[in-house]
Amino acid sequence: MTTIFTPAHDLLSVPFSAATDFTDLADCCDRFAETLMECHEPAYKLALLGRISACLALLRPTLSEPIPAHLIERFTVDTLPETPSYFEPDAEALCDYCQTLTQLLCQQSLLPEMEKSLRGLLCELMWMFAGELNAPRWARQQTAH
Picture 1 (tube, rainbow, N blue to C red):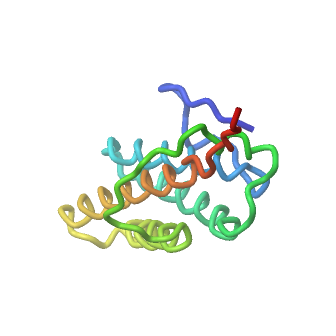
Picture 2 (picture 1 turned 60 degrees about the horizontal axis):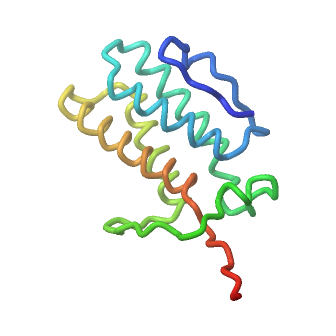
C-alpha cells in the first residue's frame, strides 16, 4: 500500500493502520513533519501532530521485527552508502524521542519561541527516523569470476 502524496492531497485523510508497511508509515511521518514545518494554522498543526503520534504508535512495536520478505530487495544495494554519524540513537530511542516531543507539542502550553524550536527539533528527528527506516541495510554479494 504505497501512498502517493500530491501537493493538493489532504494529509489528514491519508489512511494507515497496523497492516501498513513500516516504510509507508515512515514516509507518512516524513511528509507530516515536512508539512508541520510549513504550517501556521494552529488546528491543522495539532491535527498533524495527532497523525504523527498515531504513526509512531503503530511503528514503535514493529521496530525490532524482521523486515518482511517482500521488502528485502528494496533494502539491498550494490554498495552501502557511507553516512557520517554524529548522533546515533537506535530506532526505538529515536521513535520514543519523536513521540515525546509530539506529545509535548500537543499540550500547547509552550511559549511561541519554544514551540517553534521544539517543532523544528521534532521535524529534524522525524526526518532522521524516516531516513533510517528507509535506508539500505545490505550489500549484494559480489561473485568472483
